[in-house]
Image (tube, rainbow, N blue to C red; front, side, top):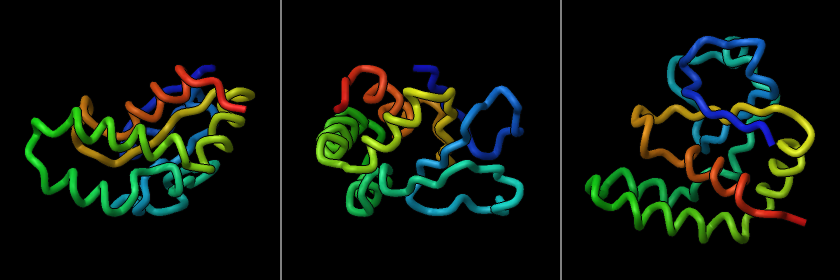
Length: 118
């Protein structure tokens, strides 16, 4: 699988492949036309409850957030759809978080690459 991640605010590039927004909420300051999305798969993002918990937590809660999100992905039906797309096409998972090292798109990419879904 050829999976990349980048912030939705970065320039669109033809090498992005299928551009898939994986945030539950629409990114501020980006019009739908300028996003150049192939798909907005908000169902694959962390649950509203988990997202709110993480934003209220201190930075040292990253490990717990990661484990909780991985637990959610195990029962998330949208993951199968994303896995199927990523199996056939180059994809770029788009997210809006400012933190480039601790965001759910990193976890999602790792999950897709390390799990064989049926």
